[in-house]
Image 1 (cartoon, rainbow, N blue to C red):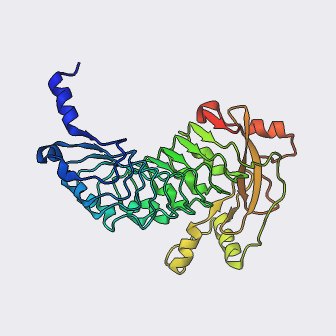
Image 2 (tube, rainbow, N blue to C red):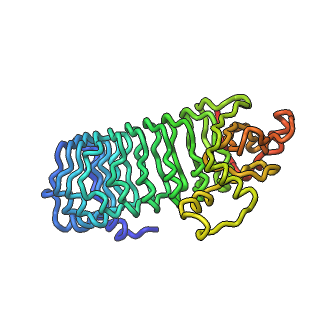
Image 3 (cartoon, one colour):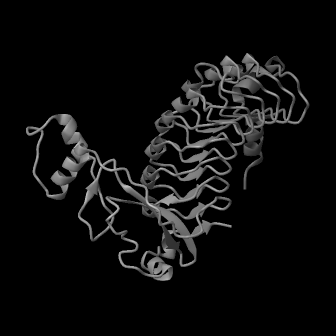
Amino acid sequence: MESPEGAAALRDCVLDFSRLSLTTFNAGNVSEDRKRDTRQLFLNYNRLSSLPSSISLFYNLEFLDISNNALTAICEGITRLTKLKTLLAKNNRLDESSLPKEFGSLQLEVLNFSGNRFEEIPLQCTKLLRLQSLSIGGNRLKNIPAEIEHLTSLEMLYLGGNLISDIPPELAHLPYLTYLVLCDNRIQSVPPQLARLHSLRSLSLHNNLLTYLPREILSLVDLEELSLRGNPLVVRFVKEMIYDPPSLLELAGRTVKSRNIPYSPCDMPSNLVRYLDLASKCPNPKCAGVYFDSCVRQIKFVDFCGKYRLPLMHYLCSPECTSPCNSNPQSDAESEEENSVPADRLQRVLLG
């Protein structure tokens, strides 16, 4: 049980000015001792249109909630709060021009800008290298910058309720990402690189424009929840194939790789060596072929958890190559059973 002295000390660390209909905040009305001792400051649910520079006087501040105001800008003074770990600024009127230039120098671990007017993720946010949780849902974001890959400590990314149409492959460079929320956007496809998110537990993609998923998603062995409801996922097996004939360079590269012809940097220019190293093996176990840029895209349903049928994209080396999921003419049921995914691989698939 907490002692009275401990409870009193905790109260001294918290300063609550929420729900007072404040239009301005004057830190001069707070004693010097209280400014020094305050660790948490609540200014949420007021009518503030700007955050005064005097906020920097709370130099030991670790938690700041300025949500549900009418803020259009965050003052430069916030960058002097060197101990600030959590900033909640949801439901304001902030946009990409609202942040101070040095905002990225903060040591933030949690940042919430949901319910504002951002059309782009400010580049200052991609410099918050200690950030573990980033929420910018319910804004007007149209894309995710490639610089998102710099947030290597990120564990939760919430970007639901925006206008995002593409997922950048750089998102796969976040080794600790556990929760990824991209629901209620305009996303049409999922890059196969997301299979590198080995820490991912929950992936929310509902209410987008998805018609299939990349087959690589099967390698997300720790994924526990996949939300797909509200997408125009294909409802039958699609047999149409799309194929661009390979270039002479690719034909030569395929010959070298499929016949295991030895080569080294001494034999050819370095750019050709790099090109050969990019070869992808055809997923058909009965085919020894490879491909580089030219491949056949084919959609195949795969059974998850013995109940849900998900359309996954397969890449084959040529139209003549038989899909590994349907190497002989079979019924859909037989094909699905062959490629089913055990229930312990994915605990929740939400389609409806």
